Length: 363
Image (tube, rainbow, N blue to C red):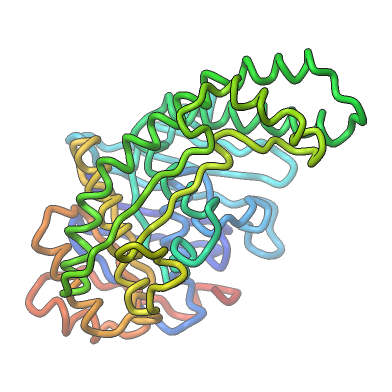
């Protein structure tokens, strides 16, 4: 599987741009402000129907325009697939496959699986539990449509349940019971699939961490579900008084924790900056491996500005590992092509240079 062509119209800094990619290594290079990261975000947006950086659709539109459009030609299973993601101010976003719009955006997820690595991914270690839950959810959504549908339903019902708690002095218990009954199947499915993902993810995380770090440090990841083995309805009933007092739902998958450990201690508290960088790279590589195994094809891997936060040796070990394994199509951005060429040696690459003239605003 590989993305062969990409066309952007009014997407972030690119008013009109087109790109052709090879199935192996593609390097997008140019000075800061030329829109390199925006190209990768467009690919991610085409794959998942949303920006990697959580930018709302309205803000993805080039300043002064009324819409954006992303089109890509994907070669998968020996067939060409034309994908389009388009959004116009005040209208519903549309995602199309071969000219036909999806009824639900969730049906599109997984058509073009992707893993993205950026300088800001340290938030996966230093950030909140919700950042680590999102990391797991992004992977599961690309392999399991049922999971994504349960996640969407759970979040919708959770929002409605919280409205009842926030706006009522004495909430209707029968109404809360009704929400609990409808949320219970999704809560069970989400919890079971997250546990299975972590079980598959853990051994690969260790392998990749030791490769990147080149040291024999003991690392681990633990999934700590809010339900802690309890039935959702039972746990929700036990938490009912607290929910009413705090005016929010305090139990369920939205409160799950995922923690990484360095030996017996939490990584986010005791890991050095270098160790955290190693962990983030290992997390993304392990995520890629799990997706590849379950989908039976390697996702696209997008590497954004590796040298911004990583030293030369870490970048070299990362790329060496990717080249030695079947990681599929790779797209890399950097300000200096020579740095990537030095690491890749005689490995053939497709180099694409961006200039200021192709963009009208800073990245």
